[in-house]
Structure formats: structure tokens, C-alpha cells
Amino acid sequence: MKKIIINLFAGLMILFTGCTEEAVTIEQPINEIKGKVISVKAGMPGENQKTRLALDQNELDVILTWEVNDVIYLVFDDGTNTIQQTSTVTAVSNGGRTAEFEIEIPQEIIDGESTTFNLYGLYGGVTFSEIEGEEGIVELTTAPWSGAFLQLEENDIVLIRFAETGIDKNSPSISVNFQHVGSLFKIYIDNTGAFDLEGITSVELFSDSPIYAYQNASDEEGAKYDLISGTFVGGTTFSNVLPFNVDPEGILYVGDALQLWGWYSPSQNEEDIWPALNLRINYGEGQQFTTVVPKPARTATTDIGKAYHFFSRFDASLDPALAFTNIVNGIILDERDGQIYSTVRIGDQIWMAENLRYFPGFPDPTSVNLPEDGSTTEPRYYAYGYYGPETLDIAIANFVNYGILYNWPAAMQGEESSSSNPSGVQGVCPDGWHLPSEAEWVQLTDFVRTPELNDAANKLKETGDTYWISPSPGTTNEFGFNARGGGARQGSDDYYFNLRILGHWLTSTEADGGLQFRAVWMQQDSPSGGFNQGNKDFAGSVRCVKD
Image (cartoon, rainbow, N blue to C red; front, side):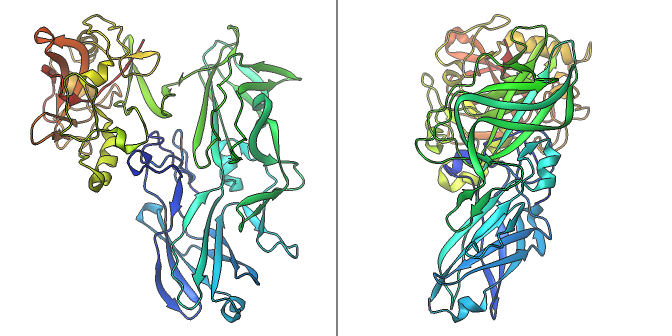
């Protein structure tokens, strides 16, 4: 697992699985048994899981992928014998999500009195303890658990673990889950001012109360982790500060961003609730910039197996110079559900460069509606292709790629129709963003089209045949709008229709005396696109515009 692949669509697959725990599943299982050696296939979860750990950075989050020669640390235990072993990945397939390796059952386990044994495994930058009586213990690296992304990669900071108990030693049948031991935390500081900030020595999240995340107690003695109990057993501490290492001293240039990652393991004790957090930049000789308005305290324990992002902006001419924000350098964080979207400035407007994926109750799959459940007056939220649990795989992929389909009441959230530019209707959009009117879409299409030509859709549609069956000649997506053919939901027997053929986007503008609403359409083989109208139970995509 030396590569980290990062994906902008944080937190998507959990939508339809309904899982609350991010686990790396070993799809077993045993292909063959040769004496005491078991051949195992280990599978990683599919793309777009809420937490990603692998190691080849793109933008925000990470997914796990295997590589040949990855080392897995194993502990066998039958109640009498506790035996250490390592296994090496010998083959990788399925885009790095499936690995093959062998487990050799120790002779002591075979000859032992117990008819069953327990097996524990871990991947990450660890070594086995050599102390007698600590056969189930691994020692973590003393290197900082934070810093630039490459530092985490080089030090193999991220850990995942599995535990399988009660295995029959005479006919071992194993099906195990790798689970995350910790979470990733990212600090993103965007320099929006006119001055560079030099000599940055560290960045910290801090509070007046303990931040309940295990971290190294010292640089000399590394933390210890018990594979059998799944707990830290030494060398760790809680602190009021969660550090993010900068090595060497950093410079935050104007128009650039400082991006730091940390891997820490949040305590899962019910009483260990994280307090409100502020951010601090340490620079020069004991100088600091700090935020004034903190991130609110959590109301429950901080989950293991997620990626948490702390977006902020720095401008030395402002007071305070450092502040949390939800949009930085082409990215917006929707704090309602943790979804992250790319954004694009086109003319005088800033648009989301992806379809909205928000729906109330995320990630509970029962919160999305079945296609036959339509309404012209009550909000409805659909994922294209979702007819129930048997269609999860299709619905997940469409949700990730095309977003949610909203009927007009869902898009408007009870607000009044608007034809103004800007519309003034927040609707289903995040704070600071709004549902555009038809007039705002007209402004966009007039700006992008070639003078005297009706080619606006060609300038806005994503290229290639992945999201359009056959895009029209001249499709360029030159403004980075990334329009996709997300189809729609209609109020008839063939509820879902036109995926990869048509895209429909709702506006805040009513039509036909309030019985219908105006919408934008783009078609695979049309260079122009246009405007039409539909009944309010019709469901299409939503793009939001910055206020």
C-alpha cells in the first residue's frame, strides 16, 4: 500500500450501504489448503468509500490499494501460544483492490490442545515487539504522524487491522475484515492575501480541553499497539494540541495553499468528546496567527476510518488574518454532510463544477425515495436506478457520478419562485450558495458560447463517452463546468430515463402560472442545449451558484 489515490467524492459509497464503520473487506476466502499453508485473496472496498488510504495524491481523500510486496503482520493465538508471523503480498489484481498472499499455520498451533485459534493482522509502518510476553504487540514509528503527504507515505503511518476468532484449525475457514485503526486529518490554508508568510515551523489544532486522539508521547519511544485487544498500550498521550509537522520551515506564498496531513486515532470511549477546535500557525521566533471563531465541539465521539478536512484562509491584511472557511481555491466543503465539490469561476459567476449530492438523512439509504414515490408539493430525492436494495450497485455508481435528482419542492425547500439574477433562493444549496434562476443560466450560456453560434452546451459538457453516450462534435468542456448526462425521474412507468443522453438542471423560476418550473437541458448530440419546463414532480439535477 505504497500508493495513495485521492478522490474528490469523499463519503459517497456509504450512502447506499448504510454502513457506519469503514472496513476493508477480505473477500475470502480460502482458495486452497496445502498442508499448513492457506492461500488467501484479500479485497479492498470499491471506490468512493468514506475513508481512503492508499498513497498517490490527487486532491483530498484517499483509498487503499494493495501493492506486491506489501507486508502484513500476523499474530496467531490459541489461548496458550501467541506466535508472530509476517506474510507478503504476492499478486495484485482488480486495480489494486485485490491482493493474494499465503498464511502458514504455525506448528505450535497445529499441535496445541485447543481445536480453534484466533488470527489477527495489521498493515502499516510497524515492527513486532521483541520483549518476552509482548508477542501480540507491535511498535509504531517514532517519526511524526503528520506533515506533508509524502512524509506520511514514506513513514507508512496509516494502520489497518483485522481480527478473526474461533477458527477451526482442522478445517480453517476464514472471512475477515480489515478495519481502520485511525483517521486522516487535513489542514488546508489558502493564502488569499497580498503577502507571503515565511518561516512556518508548525501548524496546530488546539483547544482549552483535551483533544481525544492518540499521538506519540515522545520522539524517542514509539507508541505500542496490541493487535489482540485492538488498543494502544503505551507511548501515546492525549493533548490539548494536535500537531501538524512542517519540515523544513515552510513558506505560504500568495495565491498558494499549505496542505498538511495527519494520521491520528480518535478515542472511541463515549465520554471522550472532542471540544471546539481553533487553528494556529507558528512562524518565526515564537510568532503566531490563530483563528478566532472555532470549529464547534462535536456531539459524539470522533469516528475512526474517516478523512476530516479543516479549510482556512490566510490574509495578513485582515483581522483575524487566519479564519476557517468552507471554500478554498476551487473547492467547497458542504458541512451538512461532509461532501466536497470542485468549483469554477466562469465570467462573473462561481458555479459548482459537479451536480449536488445532498439529501436529508445522509447516509441513511431509507432517506432517498423510490421512483414511484412522486409529489408535486413535497420534497423528493432520487438516485438514478435505485428501485430498492437489489439495485444498490447501480444506484451507488450513479449517485457518485451524477448526484441526486430533485423534484422542484426539494430544490426550492419551501422558498418562493424567483426569476431574478441572482435568484436569492438558497433552496437545497449549502450556506453561501443558491439555486440559480433561468436568468442566471442565460448569463452563463451567453458568456461561454461562441458569438453568433449556438454552441453553449459543447462548451459546458464533459468530453469523452464516459458520461455521454456519444457527445456532439466540438464538445470541449473548456470552462471546466463538467456537465454530465444525469438523466431524470419522470412521473410515469419508466420512471428513470435518458442517463448519458440528457442532463436536466432545475431553476428557481416557475412557469405556466406556477404549475410548472423552468429547467435547463443539454443533450449528448446537441451542441446548443436549451430551456424547457416540466411538472413539479419531475426530478432533475441541481447546480449551485455562489452568492
